[in-house]
Image 1 (tube, one colour):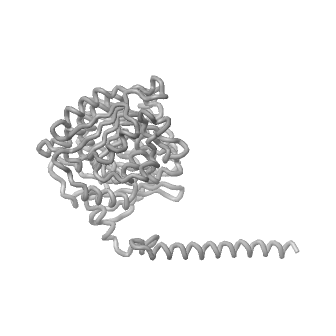
Image 2 (tube, rainbow, N blue to C red):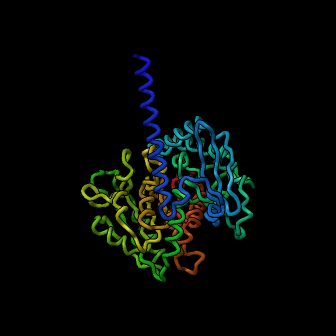
Image 3 (tube, rainbow, N blue to C red):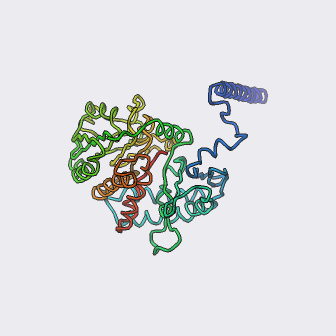
Length: 414
């Protein structure tokens, strides 16, 4: 009797598995009937459409697991996999812990944070950043003299934790050879190929007017946060207003409420926030930009799912953790404040991965907008956002600012 019962139990499990497999097959077939999804979960028979995504710069996925580690690299002429044997899961985990210690303690224990950060970034450069960039044939791209090529890092897996754009050996003396990702390329982040295609399409649709409408939202004090809610935003606001005057109509909202900010977002071309950003540990869709009435009416990530910002071409988030998801299970999904603006139709975002310095934020923002105008006869060219941020960071580096202070700034988009 025991044997019969055992066989019956095994049969029941087999039947359930068969039913699940059949349901899965039917679901995949139904998805493939939808327009644009005929190749869903199929290996591509032709790589041309993938290479088209890499027309403006290589697109790079970095993967690590217990089964092995590699980079999938898409260029305009090739798609290939690069083994990364030293980017093994144990080393990745160890250095991710080191980096997270650094980013969480940059304000409270700067010296220890700086040391940990530089160690993690040196490792990341040696095992991933340098091997990947070494493997790419950048001659296939038309790069102007004295200009750097662009690359697009897909923020999935461990690259949603480890900031590969900031990888480098910052303890060494500069040489003729690149010693960091920043020295070699201009980095942007994307959530997926589809997200990049959407952002590029949005950027093409949005025409830059001669006079832009710029919204500056400043929160010098934030209710409910005590002294930690106080930010020295006035130098940043003054610098931006001076830089943008003549190229944009500037509307500055200090201690603005949600009811004031939201309508302006729907009509502006550039939105700049100098305020507190908070990434929610448990639910990234509850991550917020803290406005004057955030305790009762928070501007949450999930609110952007109901918005379509038809005119906004650039959002600059001078706010801590504005491109960070703290839920490790959902890091691949791009659910954070910057990602929310992308979902609402904004192609370009400047954001941060960990707490930033008030002094550094003024310098980065001021330089950024000046560089946007530099090569365009005084007219703001939002399409140059990635280059402008890169140039702003380079200016910081040349002035001796530590890598842990410029590392949090990233561009996402086309």
